[in-house]
Amino acid sequence: MATAPASTNGKKEIVIEARDIVVGFGSHLVLNHTDLDVYRGEILGFVGGSGAGKSVLMRTIIGLIPKRAGTIKVFGVDMGEASDSERRAVERRWGVLFQQGALFSSLTVMENLQFPVREYLHLSQRLLDELAIAKLEMVGLDASVCNKFPSELSGGMTKRVALARALALDPEIVFLDEPTSGLDPIGAGDFDTLIATLQRTLGLTVFMVTHDLDSLHTVCDRIAVLAEGKVIAAGTMETMLASEHPWLKSYFRGKRSRAGYQPQGKAAT
Image (cartoon, rainbow, N blue to C red):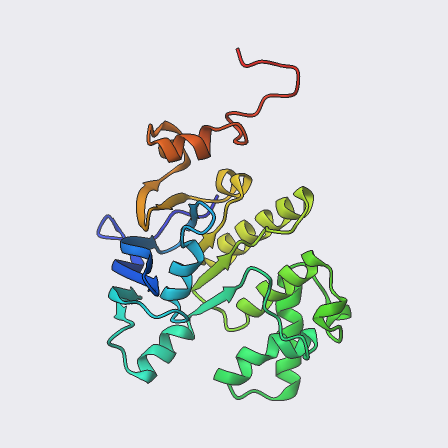
């Protein structure tokens, strides 16, 4: 589990505040007056059914998808009202790992890692190289992958390189979109451990879009659930397991959940 979320005067510090968010594509509303808070220092697991809009909210928060209504504040800055320089200063404080890694296919691993650094900082090539290697080591890789292209990497290595790039600017918030998708159970477990270790070591706030129940059980401090365009529940795993809401019961206590799994040939007692 992550370290306890930071608090001010006994209250948890909100670092991402989404209020009354409306996002749609044509006549279809994906997010319908959605509210969500993310607290400093927590790992928040953001779940929902396929197509519910989990990644849409994440992409709206980071500015890749426009909203029709509502406000988004990050570190207290209203991202809709911020100037270009204010917005750029906030973006400098977060990193993003997209579902498929989103590495630039024409760039080497080292060039991918250095790309965000070149955008914000003016460093010598020697320092850029040292920084890239240091970030790779943080995610369990080494300099031997520096000159490889994304097409030469396994799925697990791609995820780790993408995470290293997300950490390149020493962010305070990391957005993870389905970080364990496409990984085998061992690789997914290792990646969960890596995320928890990095969060604890670096003091990160982690916003994790996921459907991986093992991740939710093992590394998330809190879970928020999106359904029918709104966050219908937010709390600990214990809160989710105790809920009688039909969707929550089906997801967290259904046949494929830890609570519902029974070995073949054995009935529940």
